[in-house]
View 1 (tube, one colour):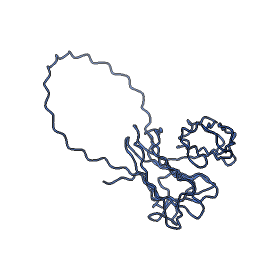
View 2 (cartoon, helix red, strand yellow):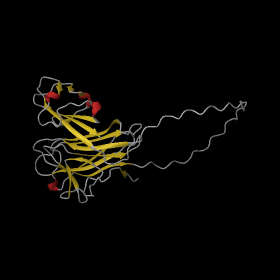
View 3 (tube, rainbow, N blue to C red):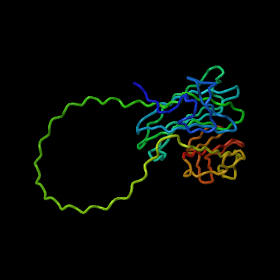
Length: 287
């Protein structure tokens, strides 16, 4: 059975980031897992990412594949991989995959060694018409740049229709009912309102990632915009209604949504952290 790769330019062999929505990433010919190119994610002080929408049908699962390596001897920066589902109007329907590669877990490219990731998404929910793949890093001091190559989202084609089953026996013919009189023709109804504007033509989607950064004081569960540290990209804690989705990282590890609540201007944790524990809220806006 052959599989279809939904990702466009997943090996970056165009020498550019065509079809991707990038930030602080560049295509390089210095290293590659296959072919001639890979994409390089800049580490501290940058948040780097690439993202792409792909078409998808309800009920389909995808196989995610990608290869990772680092440049130099410093530990690799943490890497996060997310697949999310959307309908034709870009309404968020739910997550499909979440992968965390912790700090220092990616091999150095100098040894021509790459970490190959293979994971399967959950089935796409009802009304799904597209999925969004996002690969991103966090700003972390004294970490190495990361290389990514051969990104793929594979989906199996629909199988052949099976043979038609045997025809069942014909049931008894029911009695014919009496024909009723033809009713009068009704008046023509009023013209309905104009329908909604259709979805935009698919293409690279602009995305924005903003980081709110603070640290625990070891005493409180609630943090506000006034607690933002100077290195934050935004000092405001945005409302979930203002962004596409939100990630929380504690000590560089992504947290399940059950561990916290985000409101306008407020982050509420469900348990106390040790003093000076790094806290990072990532707001991702898909324009």
